[in-house]
Image (cartoon, rainbow, N blue to C red):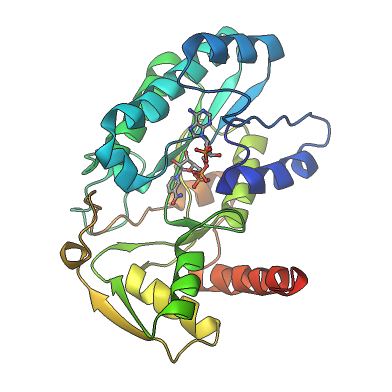
Length: 287
Ligand SMILES: NC(=O)c1ccc[n+]([C@@H]2O[C@H](COP(=O)([O-])OP(=O)(O)OC[C@H]3O[C@@H](n4cnc5c(N)ncnc54)[C@H](OP(=O)(O)O)[C@@H]3O)[C@@H](O)[C@H]2O)c1
């Protein structure tokens, strides 16, 4: 796996060895392989001769991508091409993680796998280019689009809200973007199931039900007993981030259900589970 030290990568490193006990799972991150470098990427992958390359490495800072388009495309698009070319020479299947931000949000109902992409920002365009390279070079690859990730490793929306709640009495949260918050632990299990059934093509995978960031933030505070913190809904324009986000990017996950029988639990349930794990970790660490 490439991107093994990221938020999703760490959960996958936990799930995959028990899902595939007969296989060896090897994790690489930027210090082992820089996917921007074509030759190094090719040498490393070809030396290993893997059966599957799970590619979850990316430049994921959406606003950073907007300010550094060159890096966004070098990592997310060209990096993906380098991995795909090397993997195809080893006849290894690539599993690639993509994003809801390849859609513009105008559909206003859940996006299907074959809906036309039309990204609004550089991150979305660079990830879509990655998808296109894979589709051009590999027939049996698996592309999994997901969204609004949070998990036990690294900074994310939930940890940011909890941190801000210790510093401020009033938080302003965007209320005009709708999606499905997705727990990386649930996503990691779904990915391992898709790999287990040798799924190919594009799949949408996210926790069920939808909300705005404002509703998500309120739920984080309520479930953490921080109801006293006031939350003000604001528009994306007022928030003023460099990258435009789709106002609606809910993913239709019916194909996942049809092919594996799996539906990810509602985001509220996943969030409760995550916060319980988070509290346990904090108390163990004596914070
Ligand atoms: N986070 C989300 O909400 C979200 C939503 C939809 C889709 N996705 C996709 O899901 C996947 C996993 O996301 P995530 O949030 O777990 O990402 P993440 O935490 O940012 O992890 C990505 C990992 O890739 C590494 N990386 C960056 N540039 C690299 C390079 N040139 N060569 C090798 N490794 C490199 C990063 O290292 P450094 O940290 O040192 O840079 C990091 O360890 C990505 O493909 C992302 O596009 C994420």
